[in-house]
Amino acid sequence: MTQSKICVTCGTHYPASVHYDLCPICADDRQYIPEGGQRWTTEAELLSRYSVRTHRLRENVYELEITPAFAIAQRAFLILSPQGNILWDCIPLLTEPMVEFIKAHGGLRAIAFSHPHYYSNMNDWAETFDCPIYIHRSDEQWIFNKGGRVELWKGEEKALWDDMRLVNVGGHFPGSSILHVPHLSPEGTVFCGDTLVIAPNKQHIAVMYSYPNRMPLPRYEVERIRKQMDGIPFDALYSFMRDLNLTGDVKGIFTRSMDRYLQ
Image (tube, rainbow, N blue to C red; front, side):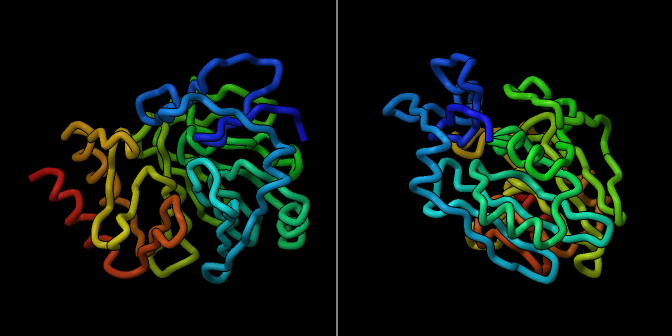
């Protein structure tokens, strides 16, 4: 594991040799510096206080979370696939039990991201599992610890294996993306990070420029996202936090949600 300092608010790891008074991710208006000011921690501190929990959501899909909750408290997904497994998004802690768990399930062929808030310690994960990191080129400026495993992709889609694909949806960040996995459900399953966010009542799907700061997207962006998602078949949607899953009337909820933005 590399030595690094870690932002307590977002979980991003920065090389110890690079000095920032403020975390660049949190200083952006899509995130925030808390009222108490910038706080940093270390990997050793995280390992002494936190562990990683795994939970099988369905056949071939596991969610990974830090417990107790840390920073943004996002989950990552381990998606098992015949020609190689993929890790969707990242959590800012990698433990030996988690390494053994993933290796026992076939390792990783790649890591892919929805957006910069979850880059965290992606280099540690990629080095451990000897795999590339796929990030959309539009978000390159937000990579503050690039490492040698990052592969930037461009355009609207990147084809993977087993008919999986990354789709650049934009909105939250220019490079915000989703992962479409057709073989997990009859019409396909979408993992969206917070490119799209499922509301706690499971009756609304949000698209915003900043979720914590409640900053909306312009109307033309909502219209564009709606049109793009209308062309993607899916009947299951998994967002960034535990229990934010939809497996019924997903297209209907998405359409009604976009209609409310556009009214």
